[in-house]
Length: 271
Ligand code: MLT
Image (tube, rainbow, N blue to C red; front, side, top):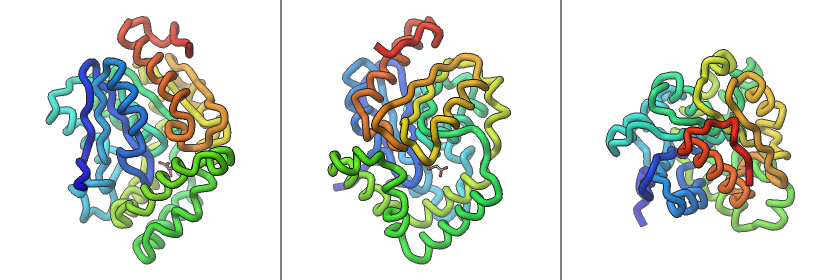
């Protein structure tokens, strides 16, 4: 079966779902179904170097800004003027770049399991090493090394289908695209400096047990933003949207509804 480079489902105000590393747009299938059934137009692209998005296949490095420009170009192609931009982890870095480059095109931001600060030297080195490892030996070792950090113990024990989906997504990633994204993440800006200037409402979501981008990272963003709310999802680690889709969906929908009512995030509450 041929997979498309993006999903574009439903009608209504738009939301763009930006996947994490090293995944593709299939990680959002529950959100695509749910939000499109609730009156929203959902676009979920494969970011450059992932899934079927092979436009940058020869690049050594794909910056987070390159990815944000690719999202804006897809919105142009689909005649979408503005959207709520929802990114998980690497998708969150892309969301930061998107609102910086195209401030008038983001109606609101959802930052899930991500963080604002740039990498330190040790983290940059680890990314360089992982990039070389993937290029030399493929994605298998990354899948083995990261599953236990991506998913909470309860997910691993009780949701084998979710575990299998996450593993399969990692294994089908193109090592070249993933390596280019690793280098792009290592080179990313410090988005902490952007926080005070972000004027659109922001929803921050984090898994209580996320060891990769823990609750403290979410609290840091919450403190720096002027118009944000923070939701911590129990029994989830890094892949909150796949581990606890009902809670994630309900939270996202409530936020989208406040944006539609133009009431802003101050009246946002998880019902
Ligand atoms: C992700 O899930 O996108 C990655 O953990 C992001 C990162 O490596 O910083």
